[in-house]
Length: 342
Image (cartoon, rainbow, N blue to C red):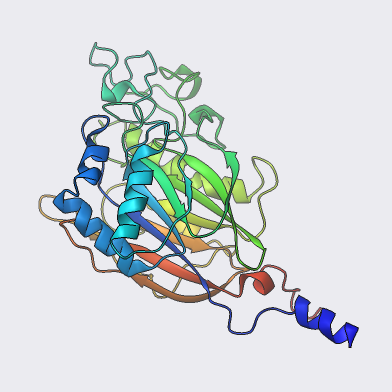
């Protein structure tokens, strides 16, 4: 009888709900600090549409891009409260690292003869913290390594270049310029089963708005490939069965940028590109923009078992980008499943 009870307690729960992970490039960022917080508190029109979209997604863990950061997470907390008041999930666990956006380098990075402007920051930003990344979760979060301060020159095969076309150590700011336009960080989720799940979260800068040297295109390429280097063990042993999630600002075909970088992730045998997301655009930039492209991604480890996935219909009153979600099935057993034949 005792043995039966032990086996029963240790067995996976039958019919356990899958973990729904979601990502959304919100376009909530404002042009000055505190403006977004004020708009959330007064329920400005865009905020209402954002809340409705998030409520409809019913994600267990939601990663948001383009949300202005403040030290006390007042803006994120206000958004969380608005989501709850609007019929969305209760998110007791919040996380938002300080992004590189708007952090002054003290250098004239774009060569316009002036200092301290948005283009001279570690990541383009009119103020420190503009357009950061944030996470809302139903389950406890466990901060992992933050790679956001890693220098661009230190990435394997770095394509570092400055506005004058000088590469590598000769580039202006080589000893200062970070790789991440916004952030690259890892965050654990303590699932109900007790099995931790690690998310590798990022928002790469756009591969445009530069000159013939293709500085932004090169940086975007290296930002996207960073996670492949991480899986390869270039920055220490990678976590087991991670999920890459974020804005690559890069399409596998069409648009600008160096597509081989994102295709290297999409075809990596260690990752799964969810079939329900393949080939579907996540944003539509109308003329004179590049049109409908897939630029936002959730790429779970091939060791995880996937359930449903979806690209939601974008509402331009909230964002041109669509919210995407993927469900991870039976994570506790999938992460510990023995290899075939064992």
